[in-house]
Image (cartoon, rainbow, N blue to C red; front, side):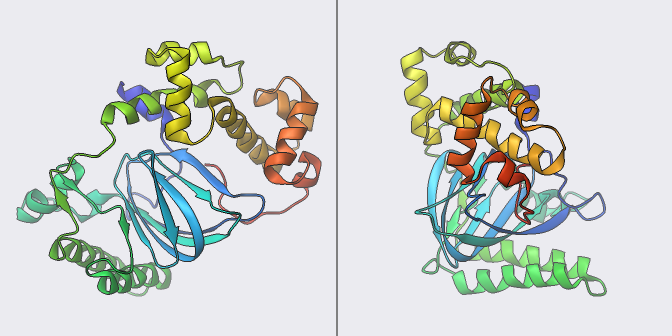
Length: 300
């Protein structure tokens, strides 16, 4: 997979700014929004589950989450979030560029601890639960990071970096960072999936055929359908329709385009079919949905 293909699948949100490449999000599901589609970004992501249960998929591997869990997602990892058993989940997430902790001068801190993470020589723990080593200290530190960024008191940037450093100290202190561990899911699988998802992202408004996607990843149709269902959890057609519906929901919220125009724009050629799938997914018709003012995490 070339760099352009990776770039096209990248999440477009800017996290923080040049001066401070760090930001936080408060997120939650509802009966309308109960999934965050698969994506990736070059920043590192830390999440704490405040309430409820849910499922993260990180590099296509599912992790069941509950209140108090900490989730660490390394840069460039594919990840998505889904509701479980119609239960709500609320969580806080911080996203930041790991380079903000690097020194302008190459030193032991960079060479021994941060460069190996960026180079995939050291693996972050993905899920830290209440019975994990060092949990209480890690939990307290991550709460302090959120509070520091929210309050933005004098010299908060220094305190923020100090707390982030301390969090990594704890990860190394309690041997939660694993050296030279090979991911149980091969990079070839994740790279193939990135190519497929990128193709859908670039062509969702067109008539996408299974044959076309088989050709870009050199799979037979039978192998492709089994491969996609195994790692994404739904059929390819279901994923394409869900992706189109997510785009449509955004257009309904942010434009005055007619429902017919939106359905055609996102790749449906039958408005009745679009309306049916939309109501199945969001529990409202497109017209009803348009009148609802949401304050939730939307598709980026």
